Length: 114
Length: 115
Image (cartoon, rainbow over all chains, first blue to last red; front, side):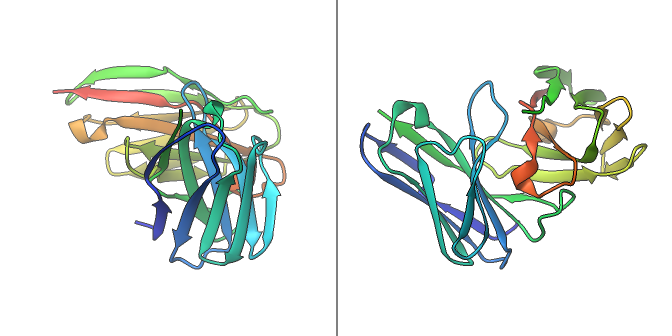
């Protein structure tokens, strides 16, 4: 298994509170990604990073921010959680940006916003 | 937004039977197709990355084929076992590529193997 650890794995939070999800990798891969998985949808990209302090928006970035101060850590922050952000969040990494590069996923973080 | 369709949405198969399901994607400007296997509460696991028309990949009892001209890929499981129960995801990337930032995922095929 790729060395990807997501924390917390499960969290229940109240609407309007800030939430930070952490992704930690031990593979020294340059590229890191945050996806969300919702019923009726495929995995959708929230934000990604192509290096320390280098990040960009994905398809569903509204309401989310990210930071990457070290190669191994990629943080996803919900500034003010809403019920629509109840989802399963997956971190992923890849060594290369090529479309044929294998993507490795973490085990997911289940977030419920009440 | 690219359209990646997987069918069927769910599938019940008897243990020992073989099965297959489909991923359809735009046939123009193909770059790569990924297949993943996802068991609930675990990480999605990469099965195959396919890049060439006519590609056939195999991993144990699981194999996949690719037709980029008509825009589909089949995933086959031979002699299904209970441990094959999972959601199978495909993801398409077009054009010049990019990495996972360019992947468009289908909604998955949920496979249940019945003993």
